[in-house]
Length: 455
Ligand code: AMP
Image 1 (tube, helix red, strand yellow):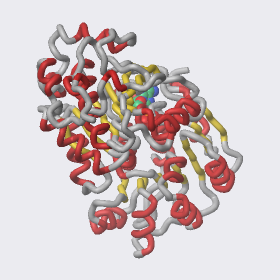
Image 2 (cartoon, rainbow, N blue to C red):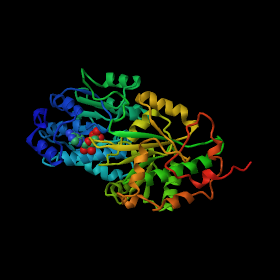
Image 3 (cartoon, rainbow, N blue to C red):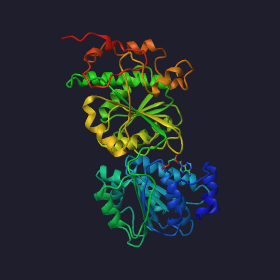
Image 4 (cartoon, helix red, strand yellow):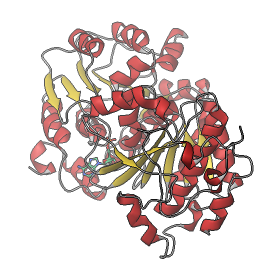
């Protein structure tokens, strides 16, 4: 089945072809004809499956007839984060380039006056995060009873972020006669309840098992030896060193590095900078213009390593992202799927590396349970030959770097000394517990691992 078989207009087909897409993805095949027929959709699809185009393409065609009235948007798209909302807006620009559509983006962190002025002119598409939309609504900024199509995107994420009461409030403000398109990567009972409440006889489309990871992502787990549970500072330092080594050995071109806490986002970023890497941060406390500027630089390859929090990076759509690092094992197993899903998108391949210690066992178990996959362990920190794919990358070191920008120190000896001075010495290779995976990466033994522990 080609795009031409889905019932889309010439204008949209031309824009799709300009975007370089030849074949519709499964969610697009399932959703587009049904959206054009006016049916409700319940889409169980994760990001990276082409789900955004599965609703934007038919919406553009539906909106081609009719006109928007002042302060009465014709369609409403709810997104959990500002970044996702901005990306959906970009999608409308890309696919709607041969159509005359008006849109407004209502997200926190940007001027409410400006957003209100955009609405005054009348918009075909309103893309919003729930909190900011309600703020503006409560100030009398708009009427929502002309909304003919409602899209609720990433519903499970809305649930995680505590937005469901806002979403329910917004839905209660809409006309009951409307078309609703509801997407979620997973369908926990609470999400199913909402879908039942919001949708009428929906067409259900599931394009992959909930919480599956893309087959295009090669996942790795690096176990960091950690014999002293109380020495968190030592553990973090060892993780930073491991991170730098993998970045170096992998010849990383660009990567997202996820931390669980904002504080660690800053620490990891500063450490990478100190060691000569081209890094920046992305987290929820940054203003929207600052986030957008950072994203634009990352997409333009001006920044190679982006250290980020889950919320800020949710749904980021970066062409050709080679690597994802989990500096911390995510506490919510589903975040793991979302994090690594930033790479290996749209048929491309990607690699992920998760840094973990023995204390992360219960989170790792939960991740492996929901994904149904065992993550490949890499040995790190002793002089055994590694047995895994990272071995391949030793060969790469002899080749010129794919992108020097991402790389810090150019020689391995610089890595050996990195942070060794300050590193506590609980990580002595001889101190590893039995049963703890032995850690080894190439034949390099970081200096701090060789030091004799002080008693
Ligand atoms: P999404 O799941 O909406 O986040 O989309 C993931 C990525 O797939 C985006 O980079 C889209 O530009 C891309 N994409 C969407 N549809 C197609 C298609 N039919 N063929 C190739 N790439 C696509």
